Amino acid sequence: IKPRLRLYADLLSTHAASDHLTKVLKTWERLEWHNLELTEKEYLIVLECATRAGDAGVVGKVLSDLSERVLVPSRGTSEAIAEWFMGEVAVTLQGGAMQWKREGLC
Image 1: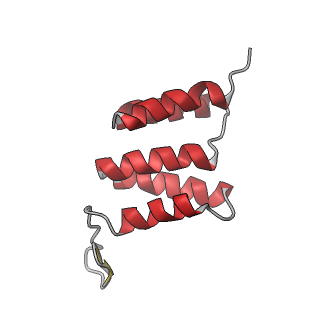
Image 2: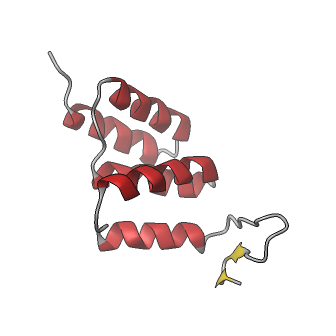
Image 3: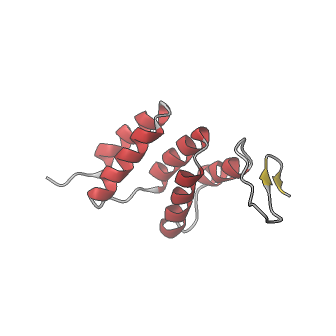
């Protein structure tokens, strides 16, 4: 029996709603092991959880994968991406002129 994305989608959502990023990542890894690709909906779930956790590495992977698989993101996904870049977690490029802060690009 070949597993389907919908079998894992609720599990992914449940872990994310509980802010269990490690469990979200393990579920995502399991999906990839079964050669199942996330849809925009699942990427959004992971992105929101990673944003709450402040995990730049996970957000980077989500954005990379999302850009390859979703031509035009939905409004909700676009807002979640903007929330990451304007959120509490500030990313500073060492030695560079750009700094991401809550106000946006400086």
